[in-house]
Length: 260
Image (tube, rainbow, N blue to C red; front, side, top):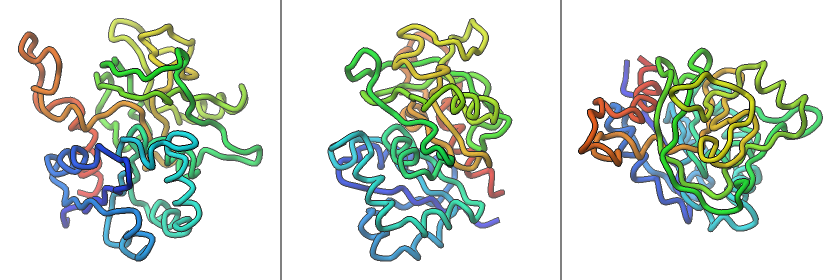
């Protein structure tokens, strides 16, 4: 099979695009960083890629709300092209700010007749939070999480709380296997019962750290897998036996392997 091609979407304020490009390169993909304005000018560019990734950072300064301006731009200028990309059986990944964009554009399939099922809002403690977190993955549906059960990844966000519309919306996400990643300590079972800070660092409903669509091909998560693709990126790498390849790289390898 040809080497999968990945488009990492650049935008003003995004600051994780180079790290994400590097992660996909390590995973064996052919990667290009393309500015959103170039895609707006030539939407057909998307036809030449199998994976679209919206990286982390602070797109357009997070004016109005995190990811909102870029999401609105995509909805206004690229709605048909992005939906066609998704519906063609390709993969979409949104990391941190990119997750906020995917959720607010509806590309995660996060809406029904009653409107959005969920959104991302300010952390419960009202401030930016950066720390390493323990996570549990639901690898039955999500392509990016195949073979992953537990994983440790860093977070860095102020608006990372997954808030749901109501109890029925939460049930739709839980029962449909849409909560693909949860905050969960390694020595405890996975639960939807809210965990306290810092285990759940932002107060997300059902301890959710990432959501996928019904196909498992569109995935958004708040943790940063691109920041743990080498063992030396772990804060305890000199004191503990950190496995290689580093845990975050596996998400990118799963995306590449999907097309093999």
